Each structure stands twice: as C-alpha cells, then as structure tokens.
Amino acid sequence: MKRIEPFTIMKFILILTSLFILLPASAWPVDGIRVYQKTTLEKPLARQAMISADLNRYYNAGDIWTELRHEFALPHDENNPRVQQKIRWYYQHPNYLQRTMLRAAPWLYFVLQQTHKRHLPAELVLLPIIESAYDPFAKNESSGAAGMWQMQTATASDYGIRPTAWYDGRYDVVSSTRAALDHLAFLRTLFSGNWLLAIAAYDAGQGKIGAAIRHNLQTGDGIDYWSLSLTQETEDYVPQLLALATIISHPELSPISFPSVPNAPYLAAVNTGISMNLSEAANLARLSPARLRALNPGYRRDVTLPATPARIVIPIGHLEQFTENLNKLVSLAMLPRQEDVAARDLGIIRSDNLAMQQTVSDPSDLTAVMQATLAETHASEDRYAMQPGDTLYIVRNNDTLRSIAHHYHRHVKELVGLNGLPNATISAGQRLIIPTHLNLPAQQQQLDQLVADANQLQADDSLVSQPTPAWELSERDKFYVVRHHDTLQHIAQHFHTTPSAIRLANLMMNDNVMPGDRLVIPARV
Image (cartoon, rainbow, N blue to C red; front, side):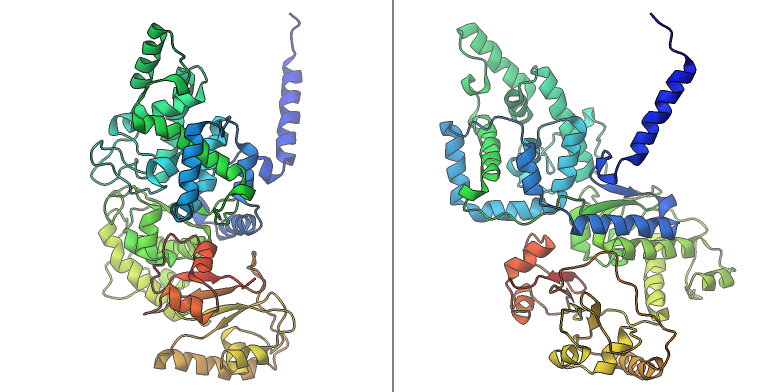
C-alpha cells in the first residue's frame, strides 16, 4: 500500500477544517437546547450576542409540523384497521390532542434534534403523547414508571439516571429524553432494525416481545408486529403512534388545528455555578414559580442539589433578565463585607444587615441576597421599569405619539419621558411602554419626574433614540404584563381577542396567569 506523507494528511485536515468554518450556523449539528456556561455568563458581550442570535432564530423560524412531515421515515400503515380506529378516536377528541400539543410545544424542537443526533425516525417525537400526553410530572402508581417518557427506575439506571431525595432525572425532560432515545436505539439494534418491534418493546419490555416472537416461530405464524399476540395495551401502542403520524402528515384531511410551534429552540439551559432556590430563580427570570418548576421538573424540592451548581431551564425570552440578575447576585454574594466600593462599582448598594458569604453553597444563603439584589437593582434604575398591567405597544404605520397617547388616555410628554425618547417622533416597528397599570402614588411620582425630564431632554440634540431590539414582534402585536386580579378571559376581552389565541401565542397549557407574567397579545387577523 502506498505510504501517505504526514504533510498530506495535515493538509487534508486543514482543508476539511476550513470547510466547516465556512459552513453557516444552521449546518452545524444542534443538540436542541443551548447551554449557557458560567464562563459565558461572565462575558456580557458574548452572552448578549448568543441571546440575540437565539431570539432572532426563534422569531424567524418556520413551523415544526412542516419539518416533522418532511422527516417522517416509517411506513404509517394508514389503511390498517387498527390504525384507522385510532385515527377516528383522535378525530373524535380534538381538544385532547390540542391540549397535548400545547403542553408539548416547548419541548418539541429539543426532542426532534435529539432524534437527529441519533439518526432515529422523527415519529419518535410523538411517543411521549402516548406515554404521558407530554406531561413531565406524569407517574404511573402501579408500575412506578415516571416522567414524560414513563421510564422505569431500572431502565433509567442503565442510562445513568439514579433518583435521589433531591433530583429524579426521569422527570427531567432533557435527561430523560436522551436516556429514552438511547434505549430506543438499543431496542432497534436488538430487533435487527425492525422499528415496530422496537417501539412495542419500549412499551411492553424486550422480554415479552421476544417471547411472543419465539411463540410464533414455534407455531409457524408470522413474526412481524401485526402477527404477534400481545397485551391490549401493546397492541394499541404502535397503532396510536402511526395514527398520530398519519394525522400530522395530512393536515388538509384533519379537523384538528395544531398550535403554531417555531422550528427553533424555545428553551435554554443555564449552568448557574451555584445551588439555587427555585422560587428565587423564578424571581430572577421574571417567571412565575409554577412555570419555572414546569420547565425544571427533575428537582424534587424547591431547591437544587446542595453544594452543587444548578442547571436551570428557562425560555429564551427570559434569558437576558435571568442572566443579568444572576450575575449581579453571584458577584454580590462572593464579595467580602468590607469591599463596599467594589459593591458600588457593580451598581448594587449593599445593606448593612445583609450577611454576605465568601462562597455560596447552601440555597438558603441566597434567599436574602436575591431579594435585596432585585430590590436594590430596581431602585437604582433611572429608566422607568415596566410594571404589571403595563402594555408594550409596537408602533404601526401612520401612528403618531399623539394618537397612541389619546388611545390609551395618557399624555404625550408622559410617553416621551418614560420611554426615554428625545422628542415625539416615532417610527413603525418601534416599541413603546404604555403605563396602563393602576398607578400607585410612588409610581405616579416617578412618571411625573420623567415627564418633567422630557421637557428638558427635548432641547438636547445630542441624545439618540433607543437602539432597536435584536428581534421584533409582529408590527401589530402587543406585549402585556399581568397584574393582580387579571384573568386570561379579562385580558382577551380588553384586547378584543380570544383566550385561545393568547394561549397559542404564548404556548400556554391552560388559562392560568400569575401577576408579573408577560404575555404576547397577537394581532387580530
């Protein structure tokens, strides 16, 4: 064999490397969820660039259902009577499937990318619909199976997931998805590439499918999935999956309207570098505690593992708020008490009675630090902070600041002041905060001061308008912060839309809203 010179090999590697560098970002393998490491959090420019890219990608992505249709790889046997029966059942229960799809929406992209990574058929993305209706908290009391993928403790343990008093990875969607798909890949190999047998084995266990095959070999019957004698549950299991894939493949024939889900990451994981209290982490991210727990179901308590850096999953739309507050929190908590000047340099005023820790390992140590950090950071902000009940308005063509102020019963100078505008000139696509909440006296004083400042600022030609955000809502969409006593029905009536339209726009599983929740109000079509 001809000897290849080392220089030739090195040259080939360099050429190959240069080709990968020139590939667009979309061509790189994607894990499905970006992980923000602690080192990235400490670099504001790098962090903001990553968040901006993620938001741009999400708001400009195509529809994931279209992607699924293109990537389905299994024969769906849609004319099989058992499959037809399941299709009819889903058609007769459209509300069930719509609720399930809304619950699945935050996770669909991640699960699809994990199937790509293992070269598995895209139909497996639909398996948690059958297992748990995409409910990460689901538990089968009789069998002990748990989580979105309904994994048994023994099976999960084979893939490195061992439940503890603090954390159970079977409920963690990220960990359990990887384990479940690894197990399905193993079953595919075990059954010589026969996916219907592998999927049936995921439900019944490989031993029972193997026994059914051996029985049919002895009797001379077929050994394909449709010929095996199995329990009713397993005989229904595969037809359910194929029925779902058939329904999604033929939307023109279906009476079911699926929610619009972008084919892009909706979630990100943040490696915080510290153990955290989940309620306070929700406060840092400006999320309701219930919503944060729904995205981090693996934690069995309100705190993450003691003395262990936490990984928190949050929507990408809350990343900037969370990482900024987290950085201030960690920086403040790590400072010695005597370094007051350094604390002031961070933009944080340290309370004299606040016990600071040189190192942070216990989540309970952080509670007071978090509360003080948030309160003092907000108090030190010069700009008006959006309040529960306020509206984020996207300027349309032909809008004027006067017409917007008149519509919301506000003063023009008030809008100029609290939005930091140099004058009353606005442009289509610009975002304006409208103070539609019920003003408390202290908040009204803040508004009055901003109006007074606006009179002074209008004469200053050196001021420039606020930079345009990296991503844009639709020109006619609005952004609303939920206030006390709000209901989704009340909010929908106020904006002349429907609760279902708001649920779809925000990937909500139900009508529950909490004060401080931020909702996109979609424009009426």
